[in-house]
Image 1 (cartoon, rainbow, N blue to C red):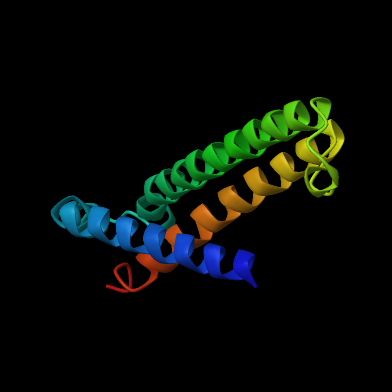
Image 2 (tube, one colour):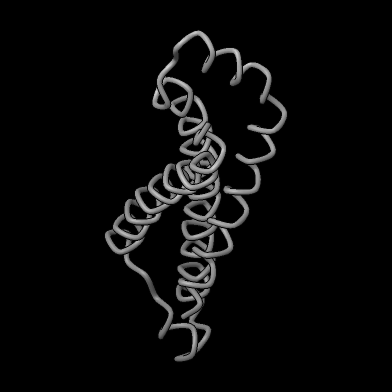
Length: 123
């Protein structure tokens, strides 16, 4: 449930960021459309921007996962008790989570960009 809420929040933030960028570049987009640029030609830079935003957010979360893994591993080595042992994450698990988070971040970024531009490009 929490993951769905976080994905929805990231979608909301990226859509709004792309809409603001579209609004700031509306004259350039209008000129591009007037000279015959296709929707995909106009949409592609914004989708790349959303992809980068998604990857940056995912990269930050991957850094947190690996940081917490290091902290918890150190706590386990000191023998902090059974409560900390229940949170142990192997390196393979952390890598799998990192890969999934990066892919989901990229997909969310591209999808949010597509949604943010959909209404504006219906000219």
